Length: 280
Image (cartoon, rainbow, N blue to C red; front, side, top):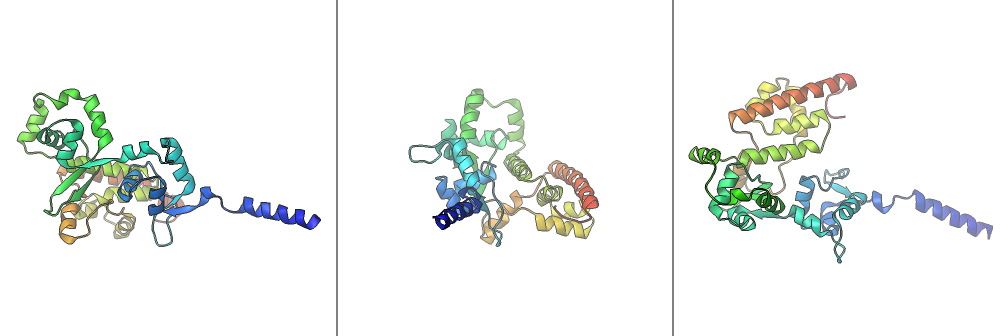
């Protein structure tokens, strides 16, 4: 009897010391399935910061803690099937002016004007077979805009919009870059990684001028974020998409350059305190 009680105590201790379900790391494919999302929907949830990635796998692939998936599911609520339906609504995206216009209840031409003038901010892009950019928009944000700005959905365009359209302006790439960079910066507090995010949207010549030290440029290049999910692999389409990743107007590049120089000041101060370059 004494031996049995000892064995039971040892078994219980082993159970308590063993990693629980909350510590289990799962792949993105498994995490998406457990949350009831497609791969693209799950990638958007990660992009938006709704789902936080855990420690990377040895090969560099992202992994997700079971506790994080439980947290997201609990925060979003569950349907009868056990899946969080509100999460799917938050990451639902529509592609192009026709689909976006249908959500807003307007014509495609008005939708295009609202987007080109910066009232609607894309959440992503894809390149179609004609090498044209097709912008993606969060359906929830479009519905929120329709409820907040009903006057923008009817009547004539305001003077500011008319000026932009007369100048053939298109603020969609710039607005998307601002959103993309902001989301990336929210994922890290490390000054070198933040500097790398800012450097990644600057043309190469701007980075060379802002960062004259070749060793620092190597660090920033190594820490540069990968292209967003859905970035095309085919060379011709990738060349079109690559232009979306770089700040193009001079004033936009100037803003990112100033932000990079500020971030580098913090990164260099960190290196002085730790005696090492790079993230801590």
